[in-house]
Amino acid sequence: MKVLFVCLGNICRSPMAESLFVSKLQDLSCEYVVESAGTGDWHAGQPPDRRTRAVLQQNGIEHYSLARQVTKSDFEQFDHIIAMDEQNRDDLLRWPGARKDKVSLMMSWVEAPPTMNVPDPYYGTQEDFELVYELLDEATSELLAQLQRN
Ligand code: 4NP
Image (cartoon, rainbow, N blue to C red; front, side):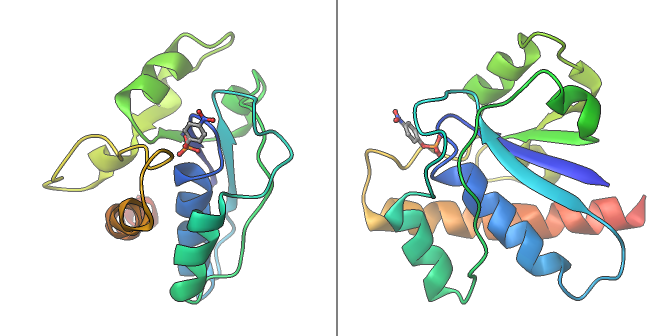
C-alpha cells in the first residue's frame, strides 16, 4: 500500500501527516510506502518548517523527510494521494496524468470531521501548528484503520 500526503509547500502539513502516519505503522507488519509532496516547488529540498519539527518532537516523533514537488509519476506509483485542503485537491485533479480515483481529502477519512480542510498554518503561530497536529493525529488514525480493514 502506497500513500502520498500532499499540501502546498510540503514543509508544514503534509510532512506532519507523513511523520504521524509512519509513527503509527511501526507496530504493524504489513508493508506501506509513505511519502509527502507539495503542489508548489518553492521549498524543494528543505526539511519541514521548524514549527512542524517542534510539534512532532514534543510528541516524540523523529521521522521526517525533505520537501519535493508532486510529479506525474506519483499518480502511477501511489494508491492513495491525500490532499490537505480543497485547493490542493483541485490542483491535483488538474495535474498532468492525474488519476482522479486516487485523490482524496485528508479530512474525508474522518467520520464526522470538524472541518473538510486542514488549515494552512504557514503564516500562523505555534498554536496553529498544534491544531494541525490534533486534526492530523485523528485523521491519520482513521485512515490507517480504514486501510487495514480493506
Ligand atoms: P504547507 O504550508 O502547504 O502546509 O507546507 C505552506 C508552506 C509554505 C508556503 C505556504 C504554505 N509558502 O507560501 O511558501
